[in-house]
Length: 104
Image 1: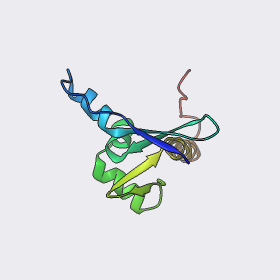
Image 2 (image 1 turned 60 degrees about the vertical axis):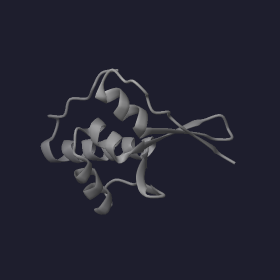
Image 3 (image 1 turned 120 degrees about the vertical axis):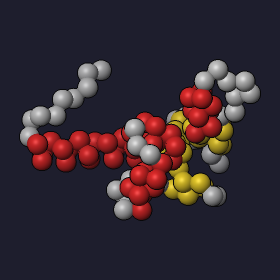
Image 4 (image 1 turned 180 degrees about the vertical axis):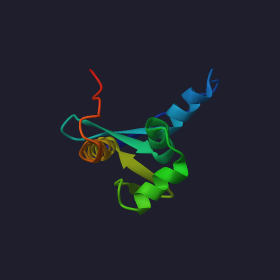
């Protein structure tokens, strides 16, 4: 059975970002020694530089795959990467070679 570890809240954070990050990322340890990152809607919004309602709209429009855990919606990190890759391809098709890929 998979074990879920919730990142603990920071008691005396120095920045709001530390609190937001601590509350928004879950880790799931799978049996084959892989770690699955689970992001909340706010974490996805922060990463994509969108608002939380806009992320929920993307989920409702079935553009972004998400799961419901109790009362909250979560997005798997791999689904977020797939969404970004799909949007990047759509942009490249629409505007041609204008797209600049980030360097690693």
